[in-house]
Length: 390
Image (cartoon, rainbow, N blue to C red; front, side):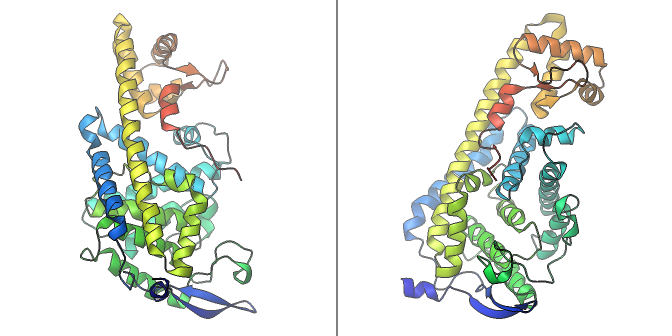
């Protein structure tokens, strides 16, 4: 079996970086040959498809599908960015999107916001009939690096120079991706494979394509985030998901060391099967968590709406403010007033009612520029989103 796997290992080619000559890795085209041994993974494939289907059917229990998709997209954006070292929190992202002051370097939270833009752009293009392609990947990369730290790393353009993973230069790196002159060949093969639907089920193809993209590392920056985004887009294009509800980065973040170890094991040993088992376990765990999150939020919203309905004449406006809090669990009086087209004194009065009911709390302690938190909602959404230690 190990001897068979050797045939899956890519080629090392000599390339130059300054005065240094190093070995760069060129992967074999997908699908792997010899073929994948899926017999031992059939139970995981079946379970992953079942849990993914249940997650995708989540709209049947939700009062507002758009609201939950809005939340899930931001959670995936945050988690994927945190894997790359971003220190932003969900609260930081919500504050940033409302033009409020954030508690981390603004470039950190801007990276997360850009990920949201890239994901939404990709999904909208696919739904309009545009294929998942190298062109679309470049478009999303341009959105991802449109501002912030990556803005100087050729947004929307495949790299024309050698990059590497870890280390200070290719000579001491953990891994050196294909040289620039082999890039388009590798990417062309990947693009063809993405649409070879007669090879393997979409979950398997997405798992394979993710590793291949990471191995090719076609951009100067943003490869990890785009590689994880590719998974979601393949599932949506193949209609395994109708909405981007799978935040797989939660599992990859929690198992980051194993994640990187398995990527490298594919390159060094051709071990696709262990990567696939890990990937499918991640789909199962994350799908369950996403479904449970939705159930918790529905229960919370129903309980709080019932409490607010008891306010009498103040209830209608307070319910509108509560509805706004579901989408923006952190808000200020001026921004809520502008969104809802209600006077600031009326918004303030509704927030005081919600505060007395224990639904919101003021978190600044200031007389001016106050912020109100829908804490129990944030607590549910925040599960697993603590920034990784540097």
